[in-house]
Amino acid sequence: MDSSIKLDVSEAAIIINPETAIEDVEKCFNLLKADIEKNYPHWKLPDTISNIKRDREWYWLKKQSGLGYGKTFNLIESKETITFEGFKKAVQQYGKRLTG
Image (cartoon, rainbow, N blue to C red; front, side, top):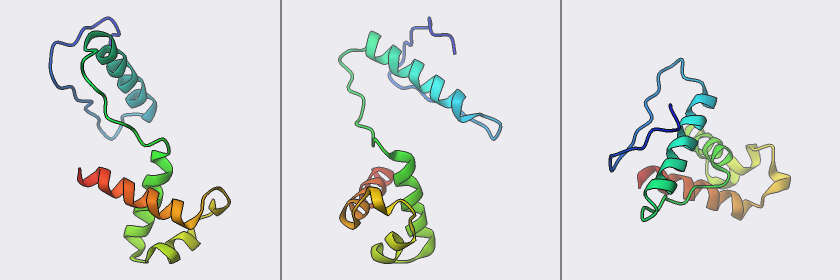
């Protein structure tokens, strides 16, 4: 994506395919974000979850295992960095973000 392009739309999308690298998506997102912040200062970008990759992994682990929060929490390896309540809140928050 050319960083000198000024968007003239109210919506933007990043279209990916199976060969798209995560680095390309991140680069494109950052360029779009910078363009929006520069050219559309009245727009508000939604809050992002600071640990989205971690929360996504935990959410799908819980969903696919069919276990409750407690048993899923016992499966994760990084328990030293978060409490059970923090884990539960992160999984619930990610789930809410998926359903809008």
